[in-house]
Image (tube, rainbow, N blue to C red; front, top):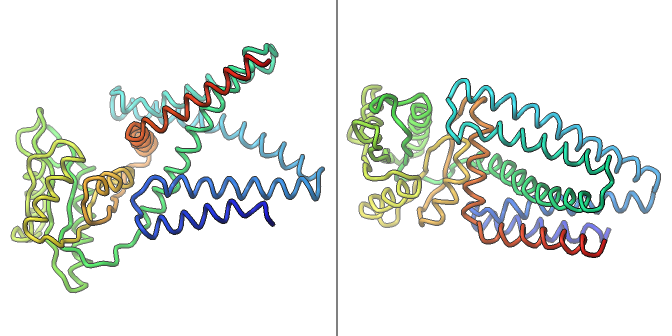
Length: 334
């Protein structure tokens, strides 16, 4: 049972961190580490007590991983083709396709190393696998914790419901994606009002270079046309990024009510990164998401993950350099 102690300690740290502040990426990493240590402890105990069964399970897990990579590569490439066909060839829309192709290259490298049995190629492949494993671990942690965070129920009363803007169609019309956010905000506003406090709905979004009016103005017009009271709408019309959305909205809320609480509404794929940004900018509130088209979700999640990795680029670069250095040391010794 001692083998499970690290997993238990890490899980306790995860629970404490989550209770103290849900909006931390470290919570996601701690959850992932606790699961890995628990699985490793289970396999170690099994290998010690039943060596034959332990080997069989180990082989089965390797096969599952190999088949899983093939299936994932096929899925991502298929999704990438769909994204290009429906959304165009912008770099963001190519992410799932490029990730799928990267997995194919990784598989080809592994097979080549196994066939040729060249020492240098084996070390290079091992180093690449270590880097890929690190990135995969972070991505799984991100997806799992983002899912858990998205299941968060808002129990507290809120003074504001903040809706983050998104690009307008033809520079003036609310897009289906943005409409989903607004409808989610309306439903949330109704629920919060039923609990005894009528929050203000704060539409946040400035004017892009290809837009004829600020996004917040189009958002407020959309809501008013559908019967939402104009007196309960405020507009923040200077922001052009998520961070500016939150900073400028925070200024409006603090000026009106210094001890405000809020709920921020965005799309489900964007919830966790928006929550991290809200924490960094000092916004007092949590983030909820509206549904997104299924085909759009993989590329969007990859984009969000890349953005988070870039936020913590120093830590990630240091770990990747250590992995490369480890591979170089093994190559020198081999």
